[in-house]
Amino acid sequence: MSNSSSISHFLLLALADTRQLQLLHFCLLLGISLAALLGNGLIISAVACGHHLHTPMFFFLLNLALSDLGSICTTVPKAMHNSLWDTTTISCTGCAAQLFFFFFFISADYFLLTIMCYDRYVSICKPLHYGTLLGSRACAHMAAAAWASAFLYSLLHTANTFSLPLCHGNALGQFFCEIPHILKLSCSKYYFREIGLIAFSACLAFGCFVFIVFSYVQIFLAVLRIPSEQGRHKAFSTCLPHLAVVSLFLSTAVFAYLKPPSISSPSLDLALSVLYAVVAPALNPLIYSLRNQELKAAISQTYLFHVHSVPWGPTLSQWSFASMRP
Image (cartoon, rainbow, N blue to C red; front, side, top):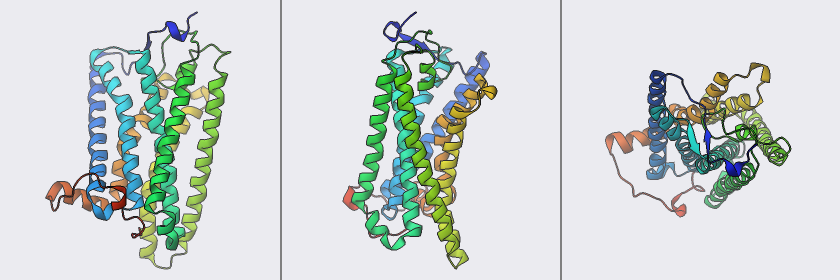
């Protein structure tokens, strides 16, 4: 029997058994990470440089792109390193850092998606109060609350998980460090504290989900009352990308954690984890830019035609939230 203090490293799940497949996975992960870096980087730069995009919707989209980049950079580089060098080891400190940052960025992602749902609800159901409810100060406070909550949750979960004694070796059934797989190595009488924290987090996540569903019910009812077809199309076009991102995020994550044990297998678990931890953050920029003409125009002007240049790093006072309505 061993405990966490005597473990110097963990063994991650290998993505493939043969050298050819390992190199193939390295190339695939490299392509996905570069696509995520390019897509999210373009969104961040275009929103930061385009004054006409300094609205609440794009402010929160910028924050979402930052969290997507963070989650990709937390899991993919180590997986690429292991595939390229044919190894599966990660140090205990590296595992703790990976778990902390992954939980931090994924939590921030979910909180930001919830806030973006509120933004869409106010813009469509309460348009006359949009500037009041979503002014620059309110947006800054909501974004700060999302990041601070994610930081506290990830810190609490990481500290509690790595304080547990581990009695079942050091082999993790995942290609990155994740709380459920570390709990499987824990002594059964010690992991109830973390189970309690996970239950509390699940209740919070369910509350956010209920809020999202309720908001979209109100949004769809309001859109159906719009008399003009063009108005309905414009309202739907601003909501559908967010709804697609939320659906992709929740469907893969929920199925990965709540699927029946009878259909569970290492290959299925690995595929699902790649979907919600790697593919979803890389697809978000594509989903948001497909139907958003303002964003596509800003990216084209900034990077293809160099129509104008704007100084980097606008201050909060430069974001004219209250004066612009989506």
